[in-house]
Every structure is written in C-alpha cells, then in structure tokens.
Length: 508
Image 1 (tube, rainbow, N blue to C red):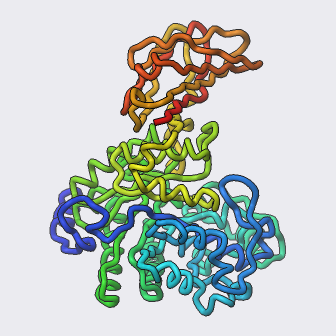
Image 2 (image 1 turned 60 degrees about the vertical axis):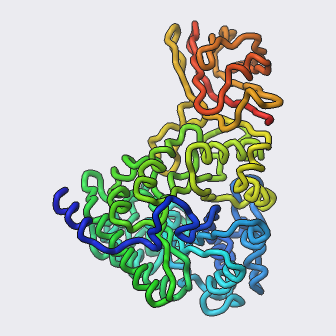
Image 3 (image 1 turned 180 degrees about the vertical axis):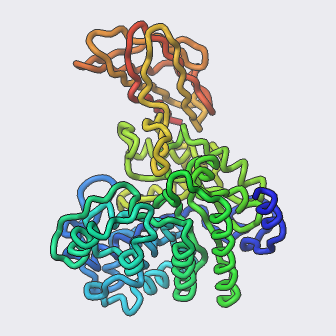
C-alpha cells in the first residue's frame, strides 16, 4: 500500500498554485493575516426566531442580533470593523451544517439571491483576498438546538453518519424536531452524526459543495477546515489513502476553477497541532506537501502557544516550500488567567512569530474593540516594543480541537518537575520583568523551591488564600535568570501541591 501510494504521488502533476521556490506567503499570493469568520453574522440574522440571544462573541455579552435591511447591516458586526484594519485576508465559513447558499432568505432578502455575493464583493473591492472556508465535518447543528441548520443531505442520508440513529430514534426524536413539533433536541452523542469519510457518497458531497462554491464565487482560494470536526472515520477504520485521494480531487476542482476564472486558487488546510495527530485521523499532510497540492498549512486550533509545537509544522512545510500560519483562537479554552488582555494576546502572537510562523490566522476573534490589535500583531517591530504577559496553558493534548499545555502540574513530595515557557523578548534588556505562579494546596503548605534555568529563585512574595497561594517576583535576579527562547522552571516541593498557572510579564 505504501509503495502504491508513493508511486501515485510521484506520478501526479497536480501542483498547487504558484509553486515558486522560497517559503513566502507573497510568492503564493497569500495574506500575512488571515481572519476566519464563522458566518454567524449572516446565519443568525437569517433565523432570528432561533437566535434571540443575539450574536455570540468569545468574551462579554452577546451582541444585539442585527436586522439586515442593507449590506451595511450585514457588515456592521464584524466585517466592517475588520475592513478598517490592515487585514488583507478573510476566510469566510460557507459550509457548516448546510452550504451558505441554502440559508433561508426571508430575513436577509436585502442581500439578494446569494447572500454571500455582496459580502465577497465588498471585501475584495480594495484588493483584499477572499477564501471560502469549508468545515469538513461540522456538527454544531447537532450539538445545539439548531434543527434549521441541517442540510437536505444530512436529513436524507443518515445511513452515512458515523453512528446512525435507529429508525425508531429517527422517527420519534429527529423528525418531530426537524418539523418544529418539538423543541427538544434529540440525544446525540459526540460526533455520532458526523459523516463517515469511508463512504464515497460523503466524499462526493463535499467535492460537489466545493465545486459549487468555486462556480458561484470568484474566490482566491479554499480553506479545508479539518478541525470542525476531526472525526472522519469509525474507530479503527481510519483510511489514509482515501483521504489523500480526496485532497488530490480537491486540487483538481480548484485547478479546473482556476482555468475557468483565469487566475490561481490557493488551497489551505487547517489541521491538528502535530503531524502525528493529523495522520491519526487520516490526514497525511506530508504526502499532500510532497505532491504539491497545498499552498499553506494552518497549524493547530490556536489554543496553545508556548506549548504549541509549531516548529514541527514549520520544519515539515518549509522542506516543501510551503508557508505556515500560526493560529490564535480568541476563546479562553485553557483556563489562562487574564487571557484576552492585550498583554496576553501580544505574548501569544509574539510566541507564534518566535516559533517560525510565516503568517497569522485568527479564529473566533470577534471582539470589535480588539480588532485594531490585528495591525499591531502583524507588525513585528511594533509588537516587539509592547508589554506582554507570557503564560503556560492547561488542558493537555487529548482534544484535537483544543490543544493545551502542561498545567495543572501536580507536584509530588521530593520529586522535581519541570515546565517550559517560551519568551520572545530579551528580558535582560527589558525595563521590567515579573513572575506570577499560582498554586493549589491544602492548608498552610510551604512553597516549593523553584529554579529558573538552573538559578534558584529567591526573595519571592507569597499571598495565601484558603486553598491556594500565589508567588510573585520582580527583581534584577529574575531578569538575569530569564532569557529569550525556552525557559525551564523546575519545582521541588516537600508537600503535594499543584501548579495551576504561571506567567511572566515583560515590559521592553
């Protein structure tokens, strides 16, 4: 099988757009910053009866749901403010539970026969680039009480699900829900109603959706979002060869559209945080790179930074002349204190640049007051001079949609344990540097001994609460011990305690 696949890849001449030597976004016509919009600002206004809470944002209260009487109304929540920044790339989610052209028109009729068309034309009119984001197995419509977002294909082809409902479940639970006879969502387990990519009908459905998007819209490219959601096969039935052939077919569709449009269409893939995780769900990205099908890799879900092994994707993709986007998810999915402050966001972005990212990809970055920060994030010189708070993430790596880090770290008595924090500034040259570490403990536990890059940390201040305590330090000795790059914190405790957060603030 491996030999056959190698021969298959070697024989193909389906190359990605503009395979110019050198690893630059510019050589492939790609933007430095790519902003993903999940299209809720169009989906929700199309069904106001189902989304009375308003428009979700990752921090703070819901925004009022816009009534769309004009294009300006559709642009106001997100795309209008985004257009005031220097951001050049928009990846608009056009395929979720159903393709965007299947949305009900009653409440968005002001946008015309195809509601995405005027949005695309607005974005591209000043030379910006527009990508159609394809969620390759989205299940939001099943997780939430959103029967209105099930496509006809989902409703008529349940036998293609990873775990199809029984006839009885379909008739007694699902059909009444679809028909509006009940608001009770059926009992749906995680990914059970995601599609099974081993079935040719599923692959054909996604290819035809992609072909229709390329026919309808003058696109600059396509994003294959494999993280919404990364369950493509039944357990034990992952088939790498099938998925490799599928991506080859995607490249064929884009090349056909490019010939018809008279310009190249780029192919981007949003993939798990490591090549091994991608391969475990059937995505042999290295094979796609060798074949020349990809124009860029979007690395990981954007929920880890210091702990993100972005260098792995950079090394792999750059060997094939393909650039890599580092990712930021704005939602605080890993319990980082103060995540979302300008200082934590700057540190996260600086870390991605430090690890070799060629560009930046933003997901769920919908807080309008924060959009001006995008210009700062894209300007590395400006970013270098701004205060930052570097942090460690929690959560581990068990969830492909939410890569995490080493916290919480349980310390066993007498057993040293080490964590690593990446800093993109030179602390020795900084005006200020300070450290904060939070611990969870029972009773009046003595604080652990801590070394930083082999140097003991002394003169620490401790603040205690009922079941926790916080250590802080700001001194010349701390600045001397810190360094640009990877910093090793080693803890040795006389009692059982848990490190729950660790951050370093740097003021250049």
